[in-house]
Length: 193
Ligand code: SF4
Image (tube, rainbow, N blue to C red; front, side, top):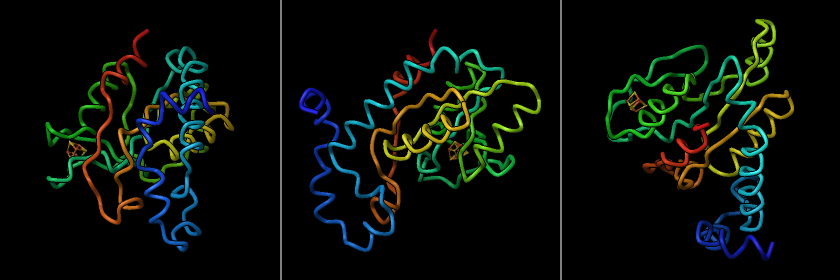
């Protein structure tokens, strides 16, 4: 923990203040809101190690999909994403939108981008198996959600990789939505063979 604290503390310095201001009922209702700084650092390590472990298998999968959080969209426009199954796909209505930017990069690597609104990872895995296709998933989410999703994919034997959001800025953390972003260079680096 001492080794990782120094390089990672820059990303988690608001954690103590957040935990101190979190009412008990919120802690009880949504455990991920109570993630401690030490847990964040371990999660960040887990994401990096999982990426190293799965990257080659993910890139080689027959079908590759991304699951992106709705909080990544441009909050200043009326989103024109289209429903596909239980999830949505970006139609590129805003050039300032990080959802759009990420989707464009993902498509270059033959990855189907989805804004995740509750589609089932298990059903997607079973459908791919029935079609005799291997499935790979790339997740984009805040650190605690990403780790949760990566562990769920691992349960179904899906090679999963992921990119954390630059911050936790959705309604669960703030009580309202704030614009969010991802590091597009990190995404490119992860996908470049
Ligand atoms: S660019 Fe895509 S995700 Fe962003 S607001 Fe438009 S349709 Fe929605």
